[in-house]
Length: 266
Image (cartoon, rainbow, N blue to C red; front, top):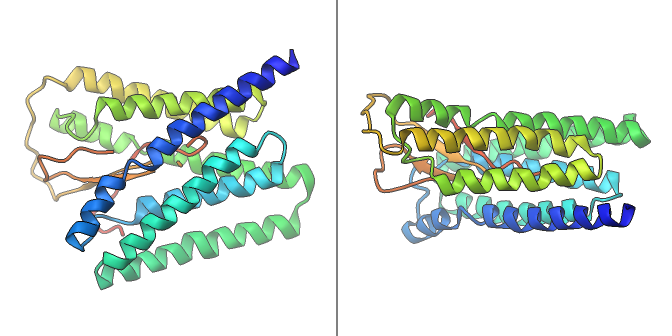
């Protein structure tokens, strides 16, 4: 019985890795355009910084957990490398202002924020208590990211347009959440399972919204252009509302859609 459970754990973890890799690579067209035009074209770095932090948190959790952590470690290590490359490309072609804000954000979240958490948990906690604290940090962080699709759902209802919420994206995000939910459930790791439950629910909501509004006439809303960022937990692509030809873009990596205000800088 235990052998059969371990087999299912491996299957769900492997499928989660495969789907998460696809999602991590989803922003490639965006960065090809950045490279081609030698400009970040108004795209923001926040989604990629957030995805990098997510990968760092889960790698630390996997290293502390050790048991049943290999597949968790592999996908987040891949995510860390990919997100670092995205940010490096962004910094090369960003304007001075955007480059400075990105450096500040990386220092705040990925260096000082993660560093403070790392030092405090290593120095002040031990054993199961350390794992529990890190797990709760990962859980809360991922729930926050998974809740972010509320922004694009609001936009869909307001404009009656699903141009920036492709059905295929919502489907694969939901499928990704299902794989990692069962992986976490089978190894009895609810820090992994619970956030992905929310990810699955929001994915279903997005697919239902797509079916409701797919044939609706778009309502033009006069408002300051807002950038919608599609995230993967673990990956995130960015679309511009005013670009009529462009659509959007676990794991334990949260892969969902987030939006920001126009003053923001993953």
